[in-house]
Image (cartoon, rainbow, N blue to C red; front, side, top):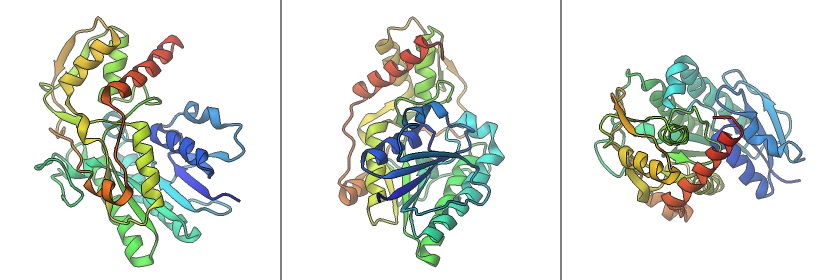
Amino acid sequence: MSERVLIAGGSGFLGSHLSDLFLSRGYRVLCMDNFSTGNRRNTAHLSDNPHFEAITADITEPVRVDGDLAYVLNFASPASPPDYLKMPIETLKVGAWGTYHLLELAREKNAVFLQASTSEVYGDPDITPQPESYWGNVNPIGPRSVYDEAKRYGEAMTMAFHRHFGVKTRLLRIFNVYGPRMRPNDGRAIPNFVTQALRNEDITVYGDGSQTRSLCYVADEVDGIFRLAMSDESDPVNIGNPSTEITMLALAETILKRSGSKSKIVFRDLPKDDPKQRRPDITRAKAILGWEPFTSLEDGLGKTIDYFRDLQSAGEI
């Protein structure tokens, strides 16, 4: 019988793409979600697949799963600023208790545990690109700290289980990812810009738009995640695309042009502690995993805009 993987947050943007990838590689997938930000539509196409199972559960409570598990992947957390600012306590609980409960499950099942952490552990970085050895510049009591510190705590918990119990752990640091299945109301730059452009509404850029993000297309990202899960590497690994670093103003202008929109760009105040720069150092990912992204920003944005156009045609945005 094929190996079984549990994906917590499996109906979310990244979790659903990982479900597709693991199934395509011959695994059985158990998708676990409480649907606070996930969407059943993301995995609806898998409902008839005999190797796919979906259950509704909240990992801030103890997790019980019958049968074997070879991998436990923790992607269960609000991930966009509007979500975690709206659900601050829930975000802290899922980062702390949720991570703990899934680690206990992995220990019980003798499974590999992969923790989805984030570039937000670097805070507003003083150095660029950001290597895994950088300890970060994080405001521990700012409004974004509910997410930043939840993820930093999750990393500490993961390493504690690895060192103390010998759990086979993987630490993934995700940089900005985009692509189909992002929520139109996600609140992050690309869904915001694309939905505003398709509606011919003002495109809102925060600050002067000089802050940068490095954007990795979702197909590249999940390939890197899969390789990390299959590796023996327990220290953190950045998975992101350093070659697509772009200012938010340039991104808005690119989407405006690519979508043929009549929108105009307007500026709003920059949110507190918004990072000025994001660019991953992926030296370790290249060396350890043999991974690097290959999708150009032009191609990835084209596919993403097409996805949102389809949602618009269906009356969903």
